[in-house]
Amino acid sequence: MASPLLNPVFVGGTGRSGSTIVGDLLDHHPAITLTRPMEVRFITGNNGLSDALAKADKPAGIAAAELAVERIHNRWFYRAENVGLHTSMSKEFLLEQTHMYLDTFPDNPIEATRALTYSIMEKVAHGCNAQRWVDTTPANARKANLIAPIYPNYKVIVVVRDGRDVAASFVHQDFGPSDVFEALAQWEQRMIKSDQAVKKCAAGVVLSLDLQDLVITARDQTLNLILEHCELDDSTEMRDWFNATVTAEGAHSGRWRRDFDESTCAAIDEVYGESCDRLRALGIAIPASGE
Image (cartoon, rainbow, N blue to C red):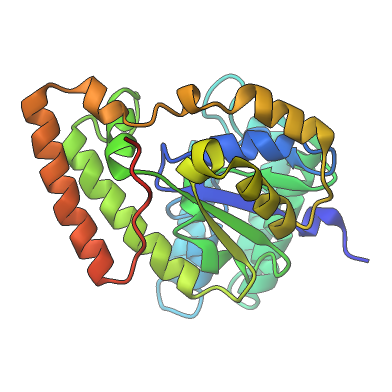
């Protein structure tokens, strides 16, 4: 029987869409643990290992692998005092593993990528005492199909949210777009990329869920869908945490109307409507309104 470490769950979205809530929810199930850091990033982050593997048969393949290694060492190893791969492994270990990866990548990119990913994630899992793990890197949504060669038995959960609330939330962060209209444009592009990635995944790999359903309109049904999708038994611990912690107030639904003046809200609504029209024309479902 394969190790539960090889049956991970990847939760993603557009950023500020609720992937952290789903990760925390699963972390309260006894059979699965949220990674520390909760976003490992090096697998699906921009110019990470999944991107390098996707380019392996192209002239730029080895350069992509080298860039992924550079980002692992300099961007994802140490992100903050308690955030980064450094919390569960030494730099010496990482240097050794990435050296082997680059040596092997030209002749066998899939095995090289698996070996590096598995070795890093074994350390991460050991650091948080995980038998099976869930990662909440937002890019998991738009790279969902690229994970398949690395973890054939994986699951993905894509969380969607009203783009106006996503954009309003970004404005209050110290990362991502600080302008609400730039944030709306980013939301649209990430919705498109996620849809493209999901359509390339095998049946049964991806569960797409709306944050409104999870938090407000279909709480029990959505929770049941998550358990079924991740092949998890019911958990009193998980349900108790969900009922006590995941609230409508905490979701800040409709915050975009409260965060901006009337004229700005009207402009946001107009731009968002145009964005939704373009997404519908591509056959992409629009998240429920947060109002």
